[in-house]
Image 1 (tube, rainbow, N blue to C red):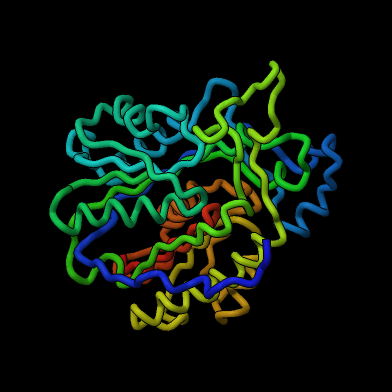
Image 2 (tube, rainbow, N blue to C red; image 1 turned 120 degrees about the vertical axis):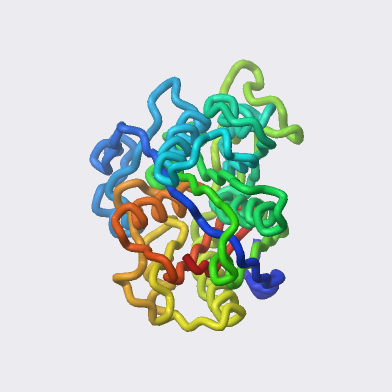
Length: 340
């Protein structure tokens, strides 16, 4: 597919304040898979670091699913917010690796947490958390929810082809969560946008597994189209351009300059994408959160994990400006300029 395409921006820009994040939480599996552990794939450790910035990632053990990680992240989030589960009246889970194709993963998480509320999934791949956050904050901002739990979680290791050395080393498993509530008019999304370019769906896809191609095991053999497929070079070029253009548009709408942003939380896809964003916008590298080297690309979980670790480390305080930018398959993206 040609790389010539319309501007990656152009999605409507909006503002929604009066919303705050009460608490954060995250979880990653104990199992650490280093680059050296992937040597059998023919992957050179130094090559992986140079091309992606990744040194290790976490893989869920047998028996652990997306819902399990989401539940643990949510429990830590509720504990940090000091809010009992009974007060949560909405649950939105961003994931593209659900436990099952039906039902959604959110009701499973709801049951494990003992919640009594509406619960549904949002599927926007690596933009899943920003989509879920933008969705849940509408409920809070309009008074339709008092306490909304938002989770980004993915078990990427289950949908990657171990024989594909171009994708398998890139991804890890994990989950992150935030609890939303009403806040002052100074808090919330000073500007945000969510967008998609469906003309480019084949750049990053799983062709088998939905109703279009339901036969996962034809003739008793595993159909390798079950695994994720990615045109890495095209996705990379798109992501670099997307981050630069979309973030600049959101900042302009929020009437903010890059130097006014206290914390940058980009989706942890590739260190070269993050480096390109830093160079293009003149961002202070000290303010860009990076955990890619330890966790790899955790898809919908990457931004909330980074947010939780930063909050717990004291890196975000009341009144700070935070930018969150997620992007991935769809091709979909979401960017928010948030006042804490």
